[in-house]
Length: 331
Length: 263
Image (cartoon, rainbow over all chains, first blue to last red; front, side, top):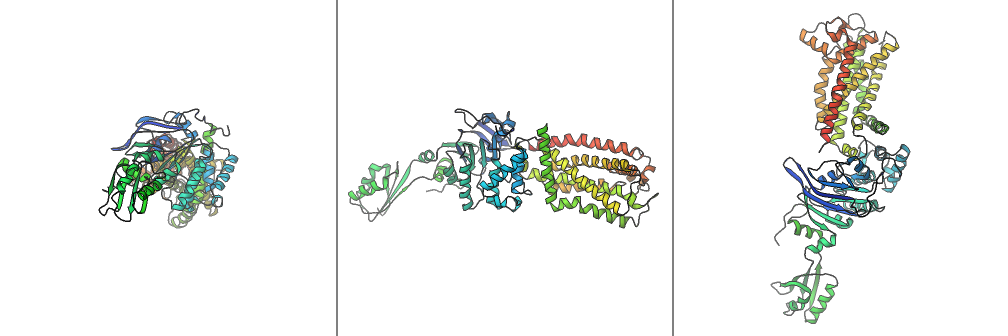
């Protein structure tokens, strides 16, 4: 035990580090959570993906003891978030969506403040602040006031603050929202490092590529409940695999028949007979096989494309609307 | 318990850093007291005759009351800023004492009050104010002011917790605090006021504290001629007011805070 107040029993065996069952929460007439279930095995990264207003932040607030659920239960590090709230706080690190550090303090003072309030001694807190500032490339900015930080720097300091006591469970609520693309990619690297020493991470995001990039498992949330759960690959497979598009130099009658062995369902041919489209099961090595088959059938191939479904497609398929709420256009 | 004390000390340190960094808050505790003291003594002092002494000796206790009362609004503004920003959420996810947020705030404000009080006293001393009853009695006078300031900061904490933002906290604070500070015996003798106004000023806690300090400082205290219990027994009245403020607004602030952070 390094620190008196950060003593935490890591969940042992197969017990998930984060689990919630049937979480419900309403604010007045607005239903924020309508029976959310989630689970993150120890040492994994769970991406909670959903549009604005899906209930992601509410879920994080309940799991981090900031809000109490109207119904349902949740355990973090094996501890009930309502009954053992104080013990849960010793096991978690949180980087919320809003600025939750002190604008009027320096970066270093903020980290010392968090360290001291988490139970570190004065010298320990200072040493840890120095260590984290250099690890998050903020060493030069350590003595500047937080209000002079850029958005990316502030987010990095927020992450640093969340791991001051090396908590075994981390919650990051939309850690890259509002950042420019370069800062986002940099942030991804930082987040991967956070869990390098075995912490469990729950990460919420509106960005499909972010969930794809970082998460071991993805939970898709919409209107306060989970609508899908799985690895990125599993979710993509749910939309029915890949889509094949072939463009020929000229209409060829035998082409559709030549494609038949590779496709699931029928082959759609365009008016001019040059473009053929079909759903295909597995995209691996498909293009080569298709070109060979068409060649053997006497068709001259201009172009072959195999579209693997993106998480955007997954989202559309699952919810009927895009991650930003746009309606699916009639295709 | 030691853990709780340490959390309070850490947050007090943090709040004091704020005062050092925020020019407005710092000027409330440093520049304004000097300015008020000089302005009132030289401008009002030229026109107001105080029975039984000089205006500067009469005014100093009143200036202490005025400055401490108005600077207690800092508690409301500070708490409101914390609650409406995200920092209180951060504190709430840390394994720390929950009461420390309020107690740390009130202690930092007490230390600010001490600074403010010292500046008024030193400025007053430089332009001729003298306590006449000895050091112990003068210190007792200062102690009553600090106690009052502490009680008042709990009342202001309630304003800060219930307000929607620092600006509205400041607005509500001004509306409540300014009449409290000015409808009193702090800056003018009250015995020639209309009966209703005189009754209000006599029962205003600021008047009791000011009168108590004037007695303890051995400075002119025209209010002693007023036949109202607090003016006849200003020290007792002050202590009762202080105890009442802390006993009422301390638990109320804790209750409002708990309600505010419950989701």
